[in-house]
Length: 397
Ligand SMILES: [Fe+2]
Ligand SMILES: [Fe+2]
Image 1 (cartoon, rainbow, N blue to C red):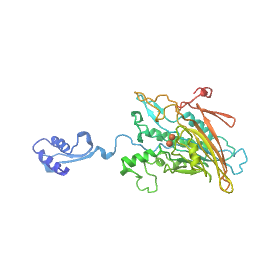
Image 2 (image 1 turned 120 degrees about the vertical axis):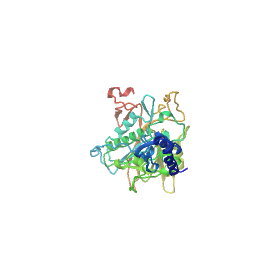
Image 3 (image 1 turned 45 degrees about the vertical axis):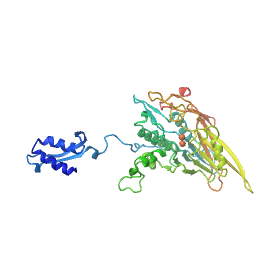
């Protein structure tokens, strides 16, 4: 029975019973309840059924009552004004690689947030970005798995992932804003898509294909509303998002390629796999969460061809907080302590462009919120949850 037929029937019945009963019957015949009514726009009830008018708006017409995922709140950034480098430049430039923070949270019953990312390690990484490296800071390269997004993955779900996607997007945006603030306005900030970042895109494509790629009205050049480019406000911060994992790659110079990576050798060297499969180029990769380095030299008729493959590790927590194959949660959904075979760190790369495609790099270990780099002790100003620390107690993390 169509809605108009139901309505006409209801009008007929108005003369037999009360008008209000007829309204209820009209709703019932259409599978609706009073709770489905969002708004009554106009009611005109008369003894004559022909004069009865009811204009309703359903609840869903004004959108969901809960807040769907949306862009991070905008951030005001005051980029650092970097001093001229202390060393003579000689065309050397600097890139800092930031691996796998896996930004995200569990939200426990009492509202407590348990982060996957390590705020202390990220704080130390930002301090390294802000150092005077002796040469101009040209690039910050986020190596992917920037967000964890477990709620959009295909692995086991946990109740405590609920209501955390927006929090992760907000924290991710803030981490990019902090990078811009420490790097100054001239450095490129690259964000390579990792397999975890790709989860949102894949989730929409698999479960709501009709919503895939939708944009704000009359803005054909804008990013899709549910893309990370839009949600993280990448353009506002001058962040270059390179998607298309696993092929997504950024060439730091002619010899050195950065990518998230799709290999993880649990019992051996992933760096050796990259070195063996691509000995003609050098590869900077993430994904394994392990600090690694492997060199390989091959040759042609005229010369030796030396390559190196390396990973700076990760910036996520390494104590069982990140959802993983070996981690676990108790009956309350709280993550148990488990020390993964993962290491935290960043890579600082010195490189030249053009035909002189030289590069050298430092692997900077971060452990328990601190590091030593170029003779300087760098301590986190927050603990792994983000709580501010007095510098005197930071070593007790
Ligand atoms: Fe990762
Ligand atoms: Fe990954």
